[in-house]
Image 1 (cartoon, rainbow, N blue to C red):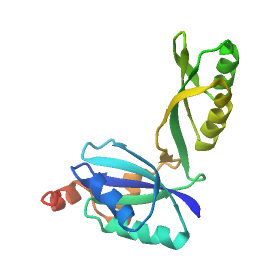
Image 2 (tube, one colour; image 1 turned 135 degrees about the vertical axis):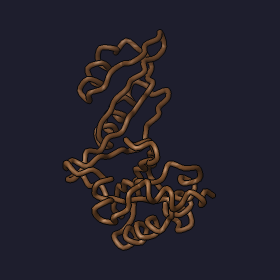
Image 3 (cartoon, rainbow, N blue to C red; image 1 turned 30 degrees about the horizontal axis):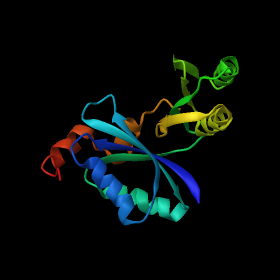
Image 4 (cartoon, helix red, strand yellow; image 1 turned 90 degrees about the vertical axis):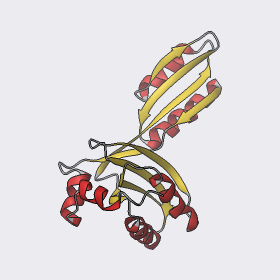
Length: 185
């Protein structure tokens, strides 16, 4: 199976996340990562969904997603057409190797954001691969706790996802909002 990253523009309304998640659940697909946040338009949210699917299944998922009334636009984000990042925060034991930990963390563009007598909290932003490598290297210092965000991605071209959606569908997000405001749950 291949990993795919979908960027999905949706109406910012109650129940949208549940409808999108249930679409994958009903079809037996697992979501590897899901990040949802606001966009430049307060009426629109952006979901970044990472899935492991084969090509035909991806086409089916995209078609089914687009049928959901609250979905405005969908774009697959590839490593060649987008910048993709995750956030990792990890707590490690504060041992006598603070200098070694600090140099390791700097190598991955991270930083120590909190220090106590028993632990260090490290924050790093990077690609999934870089963060996995950093985490593997930090394991030798004793990882006490970790939290990692879902992947987020943005296209590298001058065109935005909203502009691309408007070009392809001709629908403005304010029009789709007024058409579906009665369909909340």
